[in-house]
Image 1 (cartoon, rainbow, N blue to C red):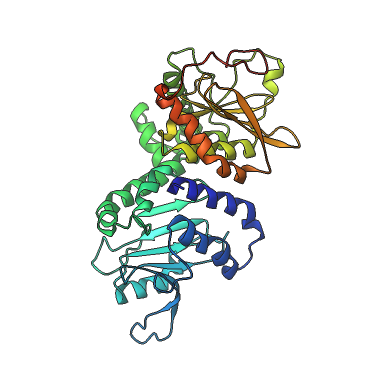
Image 2 (cartoon, rainbow, N blue to C red):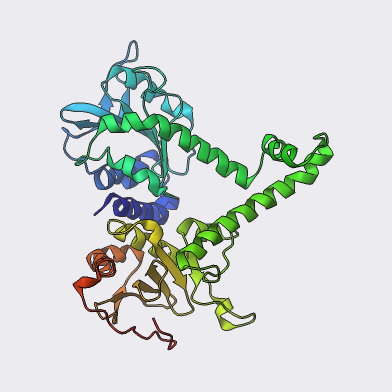
Length: 386
């Protein structure tokens, strides 16, 4: 499995079980150890690779332990300190990491609550752990642009020098993105002042702040909507090819371009389409499965009343899969070289990984049409050309 698939599999597990995890020890067993073994690829039962309760005396501090140390080529390279899931991470939680960082050869320290992983190194001063992380990976909302950097810490692709060289840029880009995200959610006074003074010549009084605060928030949301809609229109090949897209639905925005199967007139049955979180989760998993064959942004989705379609390039003639989730018995629809659909019973989203090879093969056929004859378009249930 590619690292994106492994990360999405762990994300599914965290979403499913985190509400039932109540202790730090349970967090380590349920989430942190699978992160080390499944995502990073280290053998958690081999003490030459993963050392639990790692001890390195520091000054007058004797016998203190850190949760895990990861060794590569016989040297401790990564230190991990874990806290209870659902507990927000604070820099105070990293006190042992700070001490151990200078007492070992490790250049990477990870502070985690099992869902959020903060990665630290020593950019500001040699052999002294920075106060701010250079990379933050949140399994509740995986930023796929960070996965290539995470891959450099895996057992099979360990490249510490590359990680350290990229850490400076990652640190500041990550902080800037988090600041921008916070401003788009709830603009601060300084942000409102900055934008207001670019369009308003008067004094920035409290009355002006109260007037422009909602305007700035509205303008930013409209700007995001327009950017997303422009991207959808470009992907569909023309200004009229995409349905309107609103930032009002957070889960849809995070999932990627999801549209209804066709533009619906007011009051029609199509307007009753509801995209569920389970369908979006299935879409994320399929996108992760095939991202080794094609860029993730080329994997789009369209929701309908009977099924949720995953498409290559948002093209109805390039179906990757259909998710038949709007029923008691769930099915995955897969396609052969003639675009004939076969429905496979599945218990839930996690079962999608069992059919990863078939999904990849479907995408491969679209990328290299010479591997099979070009068939006539299949016909969907509603009679429309697929």
